[in-house]
Length: 63
Image (cartoon, rainbow, N blue to C red; front, top):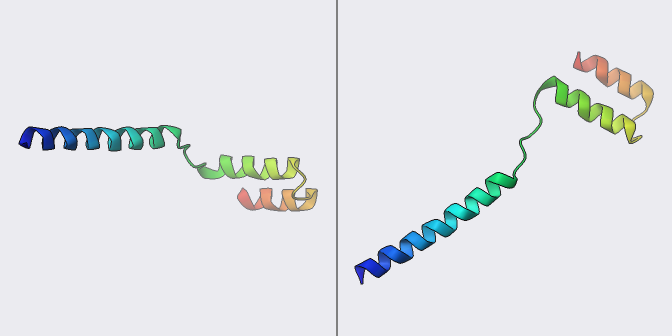
């Protein structure tokens, strides 16, 4: 009976580890630093979410 409990425990640990690995593998790192902020700002400008004045004002603030 002890061997069966160890087998179930190993199976549960395997399932948990596989789930954790799948989640970790699919997770993208968050953007960091000034370059990513400039990239996000440029993307918002390109989509038309912000105007030219606001783009340049925020770009100057990042410098």
